[in-house]
Length: 101
Image (cartoon, rainbow, N blue to C red; front, side):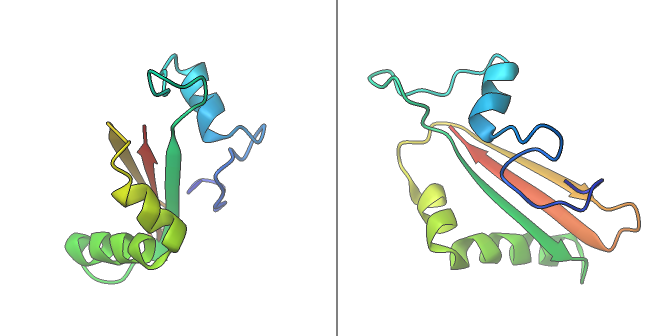
């Protein structure tokens, strides 16, 4: 996302969503009693202002201010979480993704 300055739950090339990316990587994200994926994703982009702690707090606050993102964070059905962070080449923006399974 940072390379293309593109914010979306789908990939820049090919439009693949989180469930496809999990499947492609061989990662199974299904509740044992469900045939459906139980994955969710939060994404954010923020302008670089302050130190690393302040940037992280801004990203988390952005997610907590969104009803859907907050629900993803508070969903007790998720067993795993992964977070990815990338800077744009000019170091002016931070892209973050938070994936749940």
